[in-house]
Length: 93
Image 1 (cartoon, rainbow, N blue to C red):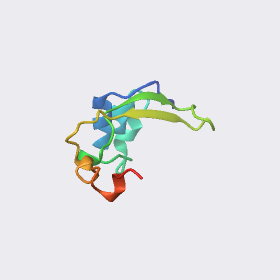
Image 2 (image 1 turned 60 degrees about the horizontal axis):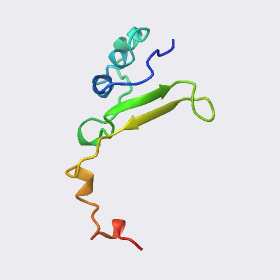
Image 3 (image 1 turned 30 degrees about the horizontal axis):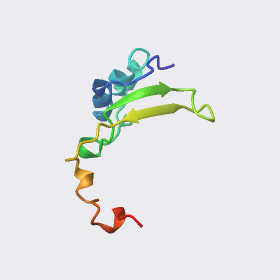
């Protein structure tokens, strides 16, 4: 079974977050609908990707797969509140 998709839309990612890998990856993955504990990723504020712009199952340096994900950053994202220039973690040397 091979995934024919070369990218994942926000709707595909939402399906994967909800544990619906069959809906995420499409035709050929219908058997995943029967899984009781289908792999998923974090939801809510810990889902740190909006879309997957590149998906290559045989890509990467060892041909084990390559995935490029993007997140549209906003100044009000939750993780910026804990890391400002005033905190030790983000101070310039």
